[in-house]
Image 1 (cartoon, rainbow, N blue to C red):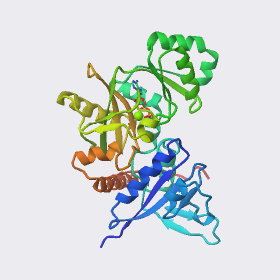
Image 2 (cartoon, rainbow, N blue to C red):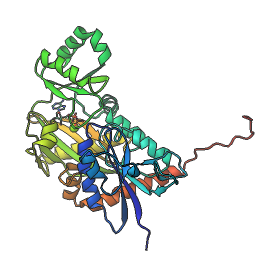
Image 3 (cartoon, protein in one colour):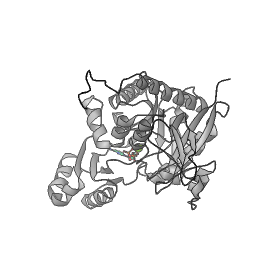
Length: 373
Ligand SMILES: Nc1ncnc2c1ncn2[C@@H]1O[C@H](COP(=O)(O)OP(=O)(O)O)[C@@H](O)[C@H]1O
Ligand SMILES: [Mg+2]
């Protein structure tokens, strides 16, 4: 019989989306096939401490004081490939075969954790360092998508520090080029944290002040009229496949944090009711966007579609989408014929495939002479 793979599921983290991650991780842990995998739950607290135990999710949810013996960290030395226990007299190592990062936002979805996993030389699910970092930064992602001729909403961006000194001209420029209503967003966040919709100058200024609490770079976007929120799931490395589209019907004026998680009144519709031609276009742009950002493993690609004209805009790519049992990413695959736990198998397979492919590349160069001596 084949040895069971040890899967390190990492969750929590120093992120505004910490709580969402805990819920996603619980679903992933429940659905992973216990006949194939041994699961090692690894929680990162809001202050960045790492703990690993079977009740790590509970400990993080209750914000309990940590017991020292739970603290285990992943170290960058590729000779270890696993967790090392802190504060123990003897060196204890727990090997990990594959990491499944179920973290959203900063220090988890933005390439930083992926960088640690590259150093540690452990295969991991989802996008690599570059795609994670780029997809997280809405301004940089926008530039790449635009360069690839994928339709995106018109944007203006600036550094908050420049806004302080050039307030009048920046506001005038926004009003001239974009007008109201417009959306104000911190460049790197998720779950709608720090995002507002402005209908006038006062709201615009307040929105910029709010966004500046989360990021030094701010972007302003023209609002898509009566925007429909259409999402598709993409899966794969070099030959990604795309699911049927789903539609989110938010309970609030837009799909803000409360509408996403708190009030439970937003609805999802699978498949989204759209003409076939539009679905094909959305699927085409989703794959193009996935490749433009150099994604691998998975991404949920979100679109805004203008209700009356059905004009399509690619809004963003999420390299670690929500994974709760009612989340769109796994739901769309279920509806496309791939059940949740099979999806997890596939993601693990893809992570190993990518790892093996990279492993074949040379990272060391042996010069003809020892000139450096
Ligand atoms: N340009 C826009 N026009 C209309 N609605 C928008 C626009 N940008 C964002 N929204 C609304 O705000 C929500 C959150 O914005 P999004 O860019 O997806 O940020 P996040 O990464 O936090 O999910 C979207 O789901 C949508 O409801
Ligand atoms: Mg979004």
